[in-house]
Image (cartoon, rainbow, N blue to C red):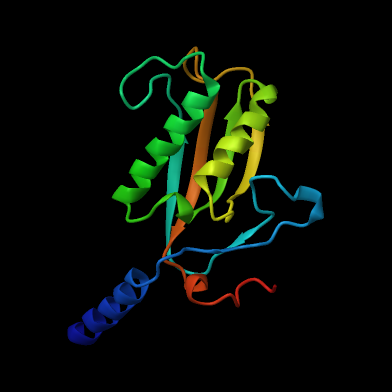
Length: 162
Protein backbone atom coordinates (compact mmCIF):
# COMPACT_ATOMS: atom_id res chain seq x y z
CA UNK A 1 0.00 0.00 0.00
CA UNK A 2 2.72 2.48 1.01
CA UNK A 3 4.74 1.58 -2.08
CA UNK A 4 1.81 2.28 -4.45
CA UNK A 5 1.13 5.63 -2.75
CA UNK A 6 4.80 6.58 -3.10
CA UNK A 7 4.84 5.52 -6.75
CA UNK A 8 1.70 7.58 -7.46
CA UNK A 9 3.17 10.62 -5.68
CA UNK A 10 6.39 10.24 -7.71
CA UNK A 11 4.41 10.02 -10.96
CA UNK A 12 2.49 13.20 -10.13
CA UNK A 13 5.66 15.07 -9.13
CA UNK A 14 7.43 13.94 -12.29
CA UNK A 15 4.52 15.06 -14.47
CA UNK A 16 4.60 18.53 -12.93
CA UNK A 17 8.39 18.78 -13.16
CA UNK A 18 8.42 18.20 -16.91
CA UNK A 19 6.06 21.09 -17.72
CA UNK A 20 7.85 24.28 -18.72
CA UNK A 21 5.05 26.83 -18.99
CA UNK A 22 2.23 27.39 -16.56
CA UNK A 23 -0.81 28.68 -18.38
CA UNK A 24 -2.73 29.57 -21.50
CA UNK A 25 -3.08 33.30 -22.00
CA UNK A 26 -6.26 34.46 -23.72
CA UNK A 27 -5.60 36.60 -26.78
CA UNK A 28 -6.33 40.29 -26.51
CA UNK A 29 -9.43 41.59 -28.25
CA UNK A 30 -9.58 44.87 -30.15
CA UNK A 31 -10.62 46.82 -27.05
CA UNK A 32 -7.34 46.14 -25.20
CA UNK A 33 -4.97 45.57 -28.15
CA UNK A 34 -1.53 46.98 -27.33
CA UNK A 35 -2.03 46.96 -23.55
CA UNK A 36 0.24 44.82 -21.38
CA UNK A 37 -2.33 42.51 -19.79
CA UNK A 38 -4.46 39.53 -20.80
CA UNK A 39 -8.24 39.51 -20.39
CA UNK A 40 -7.98 36.04 -18.82
CA UNK A 41 -5.42 33.36 -18.02
CA UNK A 42 -6.51 29.73 -17.73
CA UNK A 43 -4.63 27.17 -15.66
CA UNK A 44 -5.38 23.59 -14.78
CA UNK A 45 -3.44 21.96 -11.97
CA UNK A 46 0.13 22.95 -11.19
CA UNK A 47 1.59 24.60 -8.12
CA UNK A 48 0.02 27.92 -7.19
CA UNK A 49 2.40 30.49 -5.70
CA UNK A 50 0.78 33.44 -3.93
CA UNK A 51 3.30 36.28 -3.98
CA UNK A 52 3.10 38.87 -1.21
CA UNK A 53 2.88 42.51 -2.18
CA UNK A 54 6.36 43.65 -3.20
CA UNK A 55 7.57 47.24 -3.00
CA UNK A 56 10.85 49.04 -2.48
CA UNK A 57 12.59 52.39 -2.15
CA UNK A 58 16.07 51.04 -2.99
CA UNK A 59 17.35 49.18 -6.05
CA UNK A 60 19.18 45.86 -5.97
CA UNK A 61 22.48 47.69 -5.30
CA UNK A 62 21.01 49.58 -2.34
CA UNK A 63 20.71 52.91 -4.19
CA UNK A 64 17.85 55.15 -3.05
CA UNK A 65 15.09 55.24 -5.73
CA UNK A 66 12.33 57.00 -3.75
CA UNK A 67 11.53 59.51 -6.51
CA UNK A 68 11.99 57.16 -9.47
CA UNK A 69 8.79 55.29 -10.35
CA UNK A 70 10.30 53.34 -13.26
CA UNK A 71 13.29 52.19 -11.17
CA UNK A 72 10.92 51.03 -8.44
CA UNK A 73 8.81 49.07 -10.97
CA UNK A 74 11.86 47.40 -12.51
CA UNK A 75 13.31 46.54 -9.10
CA UNK A 76 10.01 45.05 -7.94
CA UNK A 77 9.89 42.80 -11.02
CA UNK A 78 13.48 41.70 -10.26
CA UNK A 79 12.50 40.91 -6.66
CA UNK A 80 9.42 38.97 -7.81
CA UNK A 81 11.66 37.03 -10.24
CA UNK A 82 14.03 36.15 -7.38
CA UNK A 83 11.16 34.85 -5.25
CA UNK A 84 9.70 32.85 -8.13
CA UNK A 85 13.10 31.27 -8.90
CA UNK A 86 13.22 30.07 -5.27
CA UNK A 87 9.80 28.47 -5.87
CA UNK A 88 10.94 26.82 -9.13
CA UNK A 89 9.39 29.32 -11.54
CA UNK A 90 9.91 32.66 -13.23
CA UNK A 91 8.00 35.81 -14.17
CA UNK A 92 6.44 33.94 -17.11
CA UNK A 93 4.52 31.86 -14.56
CA UNK A 94 2.60 34.87 -13.21
CA UNK A 95 -1.06 34.52 -14.16
CA UNK A 96 -2.50 37.55 -12.38
CA UNK A 97 -1.25 40.64 -10.59
CA UNK A 98 -2.71 43.50 -8.64
CA UNK A 99 -0.76 46.74 -9.03
CA UNK A 100 -1.11 49.63 -6.61
CA UNK A 101 0.07 53.05 -7.84
CA UNK A 102 0.22 56.25 -5.80
CA UNK A 103 -0.16 58.31 -9.00
CA UNK A 104 -2.45 57.19 -11.83
CA UNK A 105 -0.28 59.17 -14.28
CA UNK A 106 2.37 56.44 -13.89
CA UNK A 107 0.07 53.86 -15.51
CA UNK A 108 1.58 54.33 -18.98
CA UNK A 109 5.12 53.93 -17.65
CA UNK A 110 4.07 50.82 -15.77
CA UNK A 111 2.45 49.35 -18.88
CA UNK A 112 5.69 49.94 -20.83
CA UNK A 113 7.85 48.27 -18.13
CA UNK A 114 5.46 45.32 -17.77
CA UNK A 115 5.51 44.88 -21.56
CA UNK A 116 9.29 44.53 -21.39
CA UNK A 117 9.05 41.99 -18.55
CA UNK A 118 6.80 39.73 -20.68
CA UNK A 119 8.41 39.92 -24.15
CA UNK A 120 6.50 36.85 -25.40
CA UNK A 121 3.32 38.94 -24.87
CA UNK A 122 1.82 36.30 -22.56
CA UNK A 123 0.69 38.99 -20.14
CA UNK A 124 -0.87 38.21 -16.77
CA UNK A 125 -4.45 39.19 -16.08
CA UNK A 126 -4.23 42.37 -14.04
CA UNK A 127 -5.89 45.05 -11.96
CA UNK A 128 -4.37 48.49 -11.50
CA UNK A 129 -5.50 50.49 -8.49
CA UNK A 130 -4.58 54.02 -7.47
CA UNK A 131 -4.10 54.55 -3.73
CA UNK A 132 -3.24 57.66 -1.73
CA UNK A 133 -0.18 56.12 -0.02
CA UNK A 134 1.75 52.92 0.49
CA UNK A 135 3.35 51.63 3.70
CA UNK A 136 6.52 53.75 3.58
CA UNK A 137 6.92 57.33 2.33
CA UNK A 138 8.55 57.36 -1.12
CA UNK A 139 7.03 54.06 -2.25
CA UNK A 140 5.16 54.69 -5.50
CA UNK A 141 4.17 51.17 -6.57
CA UNK A 142 3.35 47.80 -5.04
CA UNK A 143 2.76 44.58 -6.97
CA UNK A 144 1.03 41.50 -5.60
CA UNK A 145 0.84 38.45 -7.88
CA UNK A 146 -0.19 34.82 -8.27
CA UNK A 147 1.85 32.34 -10.31
CA UNK A 148 0.95 28.86 -11.56
CA UNK A 149 4.01 26.69 -12.04
CA UNK A 150 3.69 23.53 -14.13
CA UNK A 151 0.03 23.16 -15.01
CA UNK A 152 -1.59 20.93 -17.63
CA UNK A 153 -2.39 23.73 -20.08
CA UNK A 154 1.25 24.10 -20.97
CA UNK A 155 1.20 20.85 -22.96
CA UNK A 156 -1.97 21.64 -24.88
CA UNK A 157 -3.89 24.66 -26.01
CA UNK A 158 -7.15 22.89 -25.22
CA UNK A 159 -7.65 25.05 -22.12
CA UNK A 160 -8.60 28.16 -24.10
CA UNK A 161 -10.62 27.94 -27.28
CA UNK A 162 -8.77 29.88 -30.00
